[in-house]
Length: 392
Image (cartoon, rainbow, N blue to C red; front, side, top):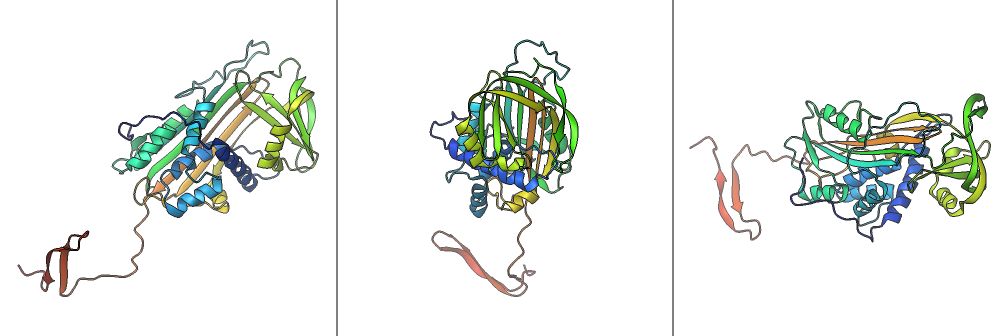
């Protein structure tokens, strides 16, 4: 694996602008969700995974491209890199490949909740021989703990990348791209994995069959898990929310329920989530929650284009000529009476852009002059003319 020589992961600085990055990431998550979510369709995305991927790309983005990334994600002017380093240190529970859990049936009396597993990984996969710049390698290693895997995009690169994805998501997601452009020279990837048990599992009372009203007003019968207890609860104009904490961690799920007929996606706005967090208070609550198990596969480029950040751009800070050609995101989640397992991957693929079309032409097909000069001083080392290049 290629990394910057003598560089290791840095300790996260205490003054990293984490709140600004989190605020921007949250606003981005809602904006993306609003672009892709269809009424009546399940949706899951990981703003964290997408932001990590574009944050790492930001380390090699030049000029206007970097400014556009900052605008879409709300990144601070000095770059998000130390903040992502700090977030990783605060969030992860495993350093390296997460263990693959036993996904068999669990008994209601399965004892103490398990320790949570949270992993965040960043991967770089570059064509053999692609010259990756040292400044980018330094940031990738020191802030994202990422080095470059040399691969052959005309050969087994896809298998190598998919193996990495499978390992980093504990087998929940097994591929990144459906297919890669044959001109790809670099893939930048992020993976996020979570496995956490509820602090209070939904196992004391049996689930009950109940109607679930769909977006079109029709109903279907589902099983609702239920429990009563002291939970942190908040309500506002047109919504209510309950916090379901995960055991042995600072993690929790906020279940955000709009009033009948309300749009659930509206509750993901940054200002609403901030209001929820500020108003949660201990309350005796009866919680009725369905199980769910689904995933979302997303071509990121169309919605990202709508948000102002599509294909193209200048990523010459990674390697000369790199431009963004493909962006994908996959996420899935399983929620049951015991807890939650979820995974997400984000991939950005970069070919080397073709040389720009010439603005004019210099055609030395008749007698011409030449000069060999020292550029700094202009001193002519050699000069002359070519009247007949075939003549010795």
